[in-house]
Image (cartoon, rainbow, N blue to C red; front, side, top):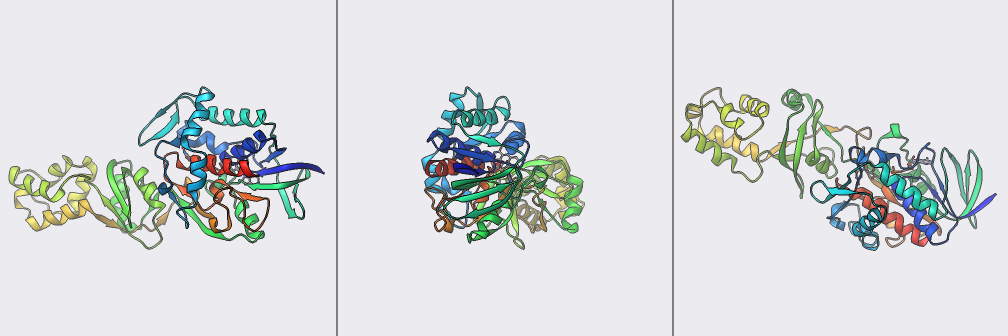
Length: 391
Ligand code: FAD
């Protein structure tokens, strides 16, 4: 049976990074994946350009049952460290918006960089390997469909449940549970929201309409674009708020950020009393949305004939449209998985299981989930680095 110092299961963002770092430290590292290619999610990320980190990474932009957990790993391997690595590999990049850094060329460059670093660090990468059993005595024994290996350290880096058609599995959660580690119930995050038929009567005909809004849920607020879809709402502001939304809660949408909707409507009534309401609204909102809202919320009259109370009611609705999602589009469309291996069972410095010496969990498999915009890859790099330093 071949012996390794470290076996990493999952050659995604976090696993590649942990394997690289452990290899650089002189460890004999085996990196296993059941897929036929490493870093598949990196390849499809950011529309093929990989939003690999964010200039604004701070621990507050990550969700977890323990909001302080991510702090240590994020401080030990920062966005600046990853930018330095990308720069060393001469990968050109740009800031798109809100601190989000994308490759100028292709996400393939990031995967090639990680594979080159792993190769230089002597990592043994084996694809199309299915892990069939894991047992723990003095060392971990990892049985695969190509034979068994042993290692002093085992790093679980198999990600979350998002995009099952790409091979996502609950493997890390299942193994963690078997070793007695608690798992915070997983749920889809950064995912489009769906609505019941009553709300869809308004939304469905608007599919394709986008506008800047502020989406709110509890104390979270995201000023970004929203997109109407055939099943409800999407776009960055809605994806962001979906991670904070819980079943049965309402979300609130400000369709006219930074503007006094009621004041504008009352002023328009005085200035343009003969104008149709939908024409006035179309100066403020996309035309199709203006028409739909005028039809749904105002009497079919010219502005001068519409009562102030009706205009005030619509003004209030435009600033705080309160709607209750029926659900989400689920893991098939979710960019990430919220929840995962409970951070209470892990060291925030090393990502090692406190009660199982040698076992590490990193990346999306852990109950740490970032905002949209490069935060989740930064968590993969930072948590992978932390484990690679200690394994
Ligand atoms: P993954 O990257 O999912 O890697 C897990 C690996 O484990 C995979 O290689 C998988 O094949 C392997 N695996 C799974 N189960 C098993 C098993 N049983 N046995 C062996 N191997 C297994 N985040 C950003 O920060 N920026 C972006 O631009 C961005 N774009 C995204 C676009 C899409 C469409 C999606 C779905 C996600 C995007 N994300 C983005 C999120 C980001 O991809 C993930 O958060 C990140 O990949 C998590 O890294 P990971 O290594 O933990 O898991």
